[in-house]
Image 1 (cartoon, rainbow, N blue to C red):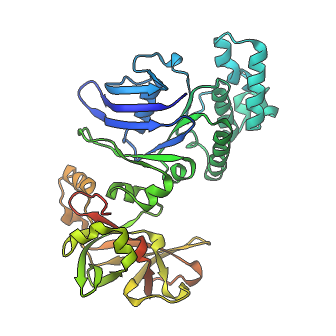
Image 2 (cartoon, rainbow, N blue to C red):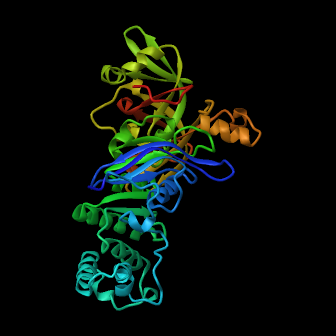
Image 3 (tube, rainbow, N blue to C red):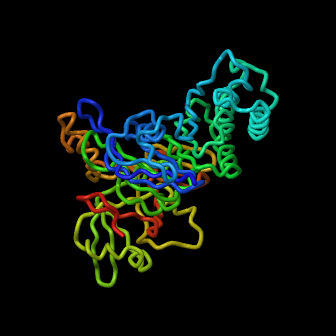
Length: 402
């Protein structure tokens, strides 16, 4: 069995700088879990602690039932794949893939079998006699993957392995890595800063946040990609997951007769009964200010909506920039509303000796709409909002309201 377990794991560097605090994470045997988050959130540090390349200051790390805190890297039965390939330039592809097996004094026949099988799976059989300099970036990454595969480890640890590839090749390699995992079923922990990569590859995704030395957990939420998207735990996860990012606006929950509304500025949207039933916690916020989240795809141009719509699910906007992307269009607009200031933004402003007033008094929005009906710069446009897909957050804590 090759489960991976982090129990209360922390990392404090000499001098007292804390990078990781109180991380609890269980990765099942054969599961593909992605660590994602902005730069400095500790995702690569966690991976290196698991690999034995960083000392574990606090807590316990297990591979299977074995605590590996003090086990040398070579004895942890893991294989790492790095973003820079780390191939030996003077060796052939075959020798690069076989190098670790030769160090273990493995039988030549077994080495040949493993390399040939990995090369076949990765479609690099024709390159086994070449040197790395004669390969493309994608081919070099396949060799690096092959070197890991031939070891037949308990777990693969991958640190942004696709970041050096161009955009088209990254998409192709994402697909190939997914197919490879389906075939091998080896427990995999994968680090990336690209949330699209995380969402398309992981069985589950762990979202981490930089803690700036504070003793608060780095790990914000661990869930399936769909659940992270549909039910983010807090403002940080909601803003990080999704591209373009979720729009945030300060709003108020208001009851008017038998109807419940969320209002912001001159706009108000009626919340239907299914929405209220799905978010019973909203009843506790009547008359209170909250943060409302609207994903770009929750908007549509009124002319593009078939089957009719309710006027109390619309807003009028003055169109700013319009980005035509072929299959979709992004419409940017502003509202005269104070922007949402999250705790992270407050901290950043404080570090710069500034206050929230420096952000101005406008809130920027992005809507993803049907490109055939996209308006033009300066147009007055009516946007229809799918209120079943709104998100709500406590203004003080940033936690989601469910």
